Structure formats: C-alpha cells, structure tokens
Length: 461
Image 1 (spheres, rainbow, N blue to C red):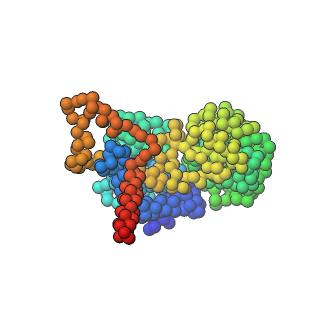
Image 2: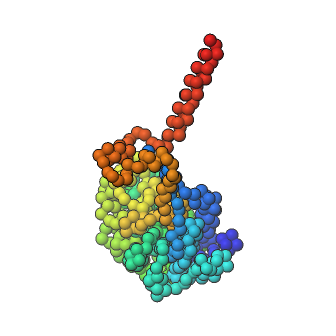
Image 3: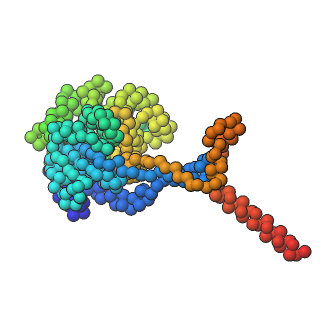
C-alpha cells in the first residue's frame, strides 16, 4: 500500500499541512515503510513463546509466555503527523494478530480521506475498518466495548479516552504530549546545538509532540544562541520565511488564533510575523519569558520558542520538576556530570542528549510518556508488545520423580512435609537453573576424562 501510494500520501500531507516533500517522506512515508519492513523481518521471532528462567522447583517443567492478540482494538490517530501516528500503531496491532478499527483525525481531512479510501483496497474489511468523523463519531466509538484502545493526541482528550476505558476496564496506550524542556549550557557547541534545536522546533511548524517547547539557559548562552539562530534561519528560509516552500502552515484557524495570542505582548527577539489568511506564523523566538506568561501555561505546539534563564543544572532541574512530567527532554552539554544530574533527577518520557527528536526514530527504544504526557509505549517490538496479552503457561508431565517430589503438598499434612517443601521452595542467591545443563555437561565431561584415564592406566599395567 505504501509503495503504490506514496505520491498520493505526500499530496494529502501537503493539502493538510503544506508539508514539503522532504518532510513528508522523512518524517512520515519513509518512516512507515521502514517500520513495516522491520516488523516483517522480525515478526517470526517476536511471536515465538518466551521461555523465562526457571527455578529449581520447576527444573523438570516447561515454563512459557505466549503472545495472544487482545482481539478488536481501536486506534485513534492525530492530525500533526496524520499518517505516521495513525498507521504505525495500526501495523503493530495487525502484526500482533488483532482486528483494528481505525479512526483518523478529522482535523487533517485530506489524510483522513486517503486512509478511508485506501485501506479497504488492501485489507480485509471483516477485520480492518476505517471510521471517519468528528467529536460525535468519536464519542459513539468510545461507548463501544473494545479489547484495547490506542490514542494519540492532546491530554484533554486523553483523559476522556481514559475515562471511557475505565467503564469497561479496557487497557489502553495514551500517547499525549507536554512542555518538553531543552537545557543548553556554556560547554555545548552552540553553532551545532542551535541548528539542531531550531530544526526540532520548526519542522512541521512546531506541531510536533516532542518538539523542544522551551529553552533553559544562562543569559550569556542566550546571547550566543540568538546570534546563531538569526543566521541559521536566514540560511534556511531566506529574508522572508513566508515565501519559503520549506515551512509548513498551522493546521487551522483555531490553532492559529491560539498561537497568535501567545506572541501578543511578548518580547520577540526573532520572527513574530503572522498572516491569518495563510495560517502563517514565522519561526519565532521569545526572550525575557516568565514562568507565568501565557506561552508557558500549556504545550505550545507551534513555531514559537521561549527562552527562560537559569544559571545552573540544578536551577533547570528545579524548574522542570515544578511542572508536569514532559514527553521528551533535551540536554545540550559536554559536561557529563551536568547531564547525569539532570537525567537522574528528573522524570520524562524520553531523553535526547545533544540533539532533538532523534530518539523517536530508534526502534529499539520505547516511545511513550509518563504521567500527564502519556502511558504505555510503542515502536518496534514495543508496539507489538503493547497489542499482545502475555499469557503465562506452566507445563508439567506425569514423570514419577516429579510426582514424588511434589507429593508432600498432599494431605495428611505434617511437620516433615512442611519442612521439605519449605526447603524446596526457598529462594537462593547465586545459582541459576539456566546454568544446570552446562554444569551437567561439565560433570559428564570430567567423569568421561577420569574414566578414560583409568582405562589407559589399566591397559599400561
């Protein structure tokens, strides 16, 4: 489906967000293709039952963990990366063996239409359905009983989804967001750091759930950062960024007005230009920002980067910990002690050091939030695991020795039986049953060598 329709996918993204072809392919289309290729390559191994470590009590038994699909799952996508954040979890759910009801975001209508029209051409409609619509349709869906729900979007709606899940004790994954901080100290390479921060912030016009939401740095670092930022933005988008084909647009007028209100009255160091008719907001950097300013109250989700001043890693830690746990955190520093201090003393969904967004693309890392920024995780095997129930299985046989060892559990009870069972069940440190086969083989090898030596000695006599 992806290979045959990638051009149409790019057109849908351009229609909804005016995404440039490079952003469309890099952040969505190629991401989807590579995620699916990786799943296909590894699925045979993922579906095999796990064989966890056994204790002495179960050394003669089979101990397995089977991976069962939940059943019928609901995947609710978001509008900012409307293909990627909808279809990556859909692929994981299918790989795990589930039937899937797909609800793309109505805020990205061209992409929603593409998904609704294309999925039926490639997937069995008895198992995989697409439902389009807005709040009314979503509310009706949440009244139904699903075996699992996967939602990507705002924390406000996430709470509604979670409440609906509670009605039927439905397990769920919530991929939400938050204000992801970016700490920069004087040891960082400011030239490189500035490019990486601005790219992470302004790609998709800042409408990225893990975009750097604000920068924490000293006044001296701020001065260097602003000098570099002016140069970089001019290089990337020219004298008039509005004319650049590489800048996305704000998704709709509602979000444009929300973002515009954050700029009004603020100290604009860079950018600040707006055009409601084009839903255009220039890449904007704000300074002299206070924690109670409008721009610091909620996730920005737009091309506005506030800078707040701190003088030390501990100041940054205190500021971050006074707020909700974010989905992502960024640290730009060569100071290992400072980096370790921030990592050890804060909580967030994930961290990227000396870059932005990159951890999202590492499929061996789980992607997800904590607390208000979400629950659960996906990507790679973590996505497969999210959509599977881990079914435990203990498998015994009718071996006479095993029955003899276990017979002390039967009545009539006695002190001697209790003593034997207590000794058998006692946890011991330093010995693992997984090494037993190697120990047995070693013992057999030693015994064989001794026997051979004895036979050769007798022969010489």
